[in-house]
Length: 124
Image 1: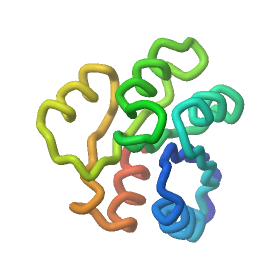
Image 2: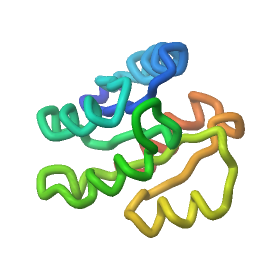
Image 3: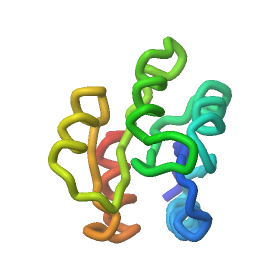
Image 4: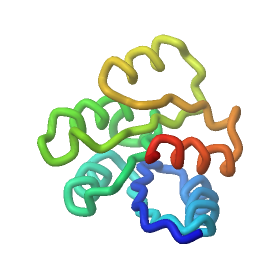
């Protein structure tokens, strides 16, 4: 099955980027990556991805701050955002959902294949 959906992954860990790139591209997605919040916002505005996977912990600012910026921007506000994290904290999940994230996934509790399924479900 060929998939022309474009995913933006905002993640500062290159190993994570490589792992997700391999899995999503194998499934036919186009994966764009950004290593920090500023790059991510710029890429979201220029590439207009179908969905954004946003790490909660980034080097220069938190994923929550990036999410706030994405949701307050007319160009990016309607792009679904899935938060990815290794922090299974209920308050972070609630805050992300309040700000407009469509899902909150703990990386250690999901396989890359399961993440592909979740993205496909979100994109319908």
